Length: 174
Image 1 (cartoon, rainbow, N blue to C red):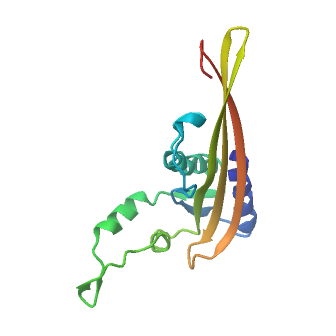
Image 2 (cartoon, rainbow, N blue to C red):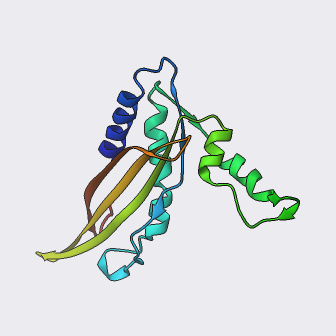
Image 3 (cartoon, rainbow, N blue to C red):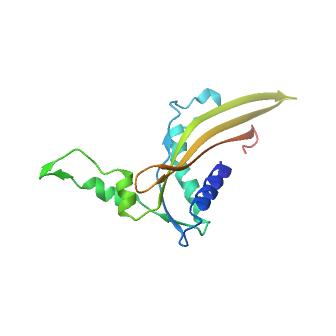
């Protein structure tokens, strides 16, 4: 999954290589688009929504190490905007500002949006010579898009998969 984030970072860097200043980027939260719930019988109680919420933190951690990017924290701004009640000709309106409005107000160059496309878990139980071992497997597919902060057009998009297996025994868990 980190390869996917690094690849998107390289795409954004190449697209903005002409600019002398670092690219100002706003990272949105990851969306859970798996459409599933956790299944305890298939390897645990991993909640896809909670797992998706961690995606933005991984992306921020990866991009913060690159001097070509300046990350803009938009959470406080969005909270303030949500408290405002927009009006149209003096009358309240249900229209709320979008993330593009936030990006324009914060003078961002690009917006990164991610989604958790699929999350699957598996479990295999091995009994050998009186020892009990479980192999838990986690498969993840993510999609990341870079959007233009002016009009919301897609600048770059990338998807990637990751798989990890964990051995669990009655003596210890890894």
